[in-house]
Amino acid sequence: MSSLGNGAFLVGLVGSGIQLSLTPALHERAGDRHGVRYLYQLIDLARLRVGVEALPELLTAAEQMGFNGLNITHPCKQAVIPYLHELSEKASAVGAVNTVVFKAGRRIGHNTDCWGFSQAILESPASKRLGTVVQLGAGGAGAAVAYAVLSLGAARLVLFDRDETRAESLAAKLAGRFGADRVVASSDLPAAMATADGLIHATPTGTAAHPGLPLPAQLLRSTQWVVDIVYFPLETELLKVARRRGCLTIDGGGMAIYQAVRAFHHFTDLQADAAHMRRDFDQLVEARDRPHSAWECGR
Image 1 (spheres, one colour):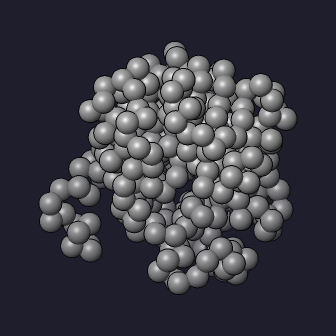
Image 2 (cartoon, one colour):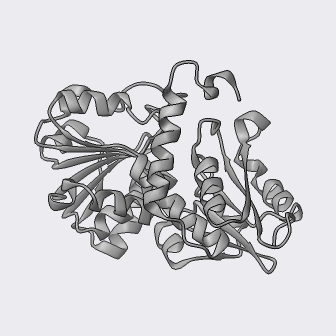
């Protein structure tokens, strides 16, 4: 049990550039609904001026301070694995962790991104035409969504990453589970996009800290669907351009909500209501994006 006492939970998020994250508020509101004391803290590597090399010390400090667990985000989802005692079946299969539970002196890694992305896609017409999918990004989040889209039945997944070795490594890992004919790493993006049914964007490009487009706009066709897992901002430049070109678009809100639903359960053994969390998310986004909002004023 956490240092807050019985019926209380202390949780954190470890990542870089995470000050705009809505996850703390989503978790704390879910805790309020269950009548439990729930405190969620940001552990921002950028603010601390450290990198992933600080993970061992941060994990130890969180345990010593009585945290129930930690959410893990960019750039730590793969780097954290060597410092854990155990991985869930899904985290092991994906090769990335976004939720660490501290239990009986052990650190147990889970991946709720995979389920969160799957739920978001299943709510969209895109789930009916997965076909050939191009994915940009083969990092921790990319590994989770790649696993998810193949599990949902995508016929072929073409992976791209600035680090071609990383894309090739992920493709090889996924090919071992789903078959070499269903996943491949590539460096020819125009050729891949010319035959793709959909595009998944899983890089930091488009976030507040890394604005811009992750690919040339002319590669998008009106018959394609486009998913951006970025959710701050919710309306990324990629989604704006894709919509103008006639594409079906899916923002990162659904994945953010559903991964939080599952992570909340791992930390507390309580069930968060997805519909309530969706309403919370929409309210928080509206407040965040409102001119001169509390976010901008630093409150």
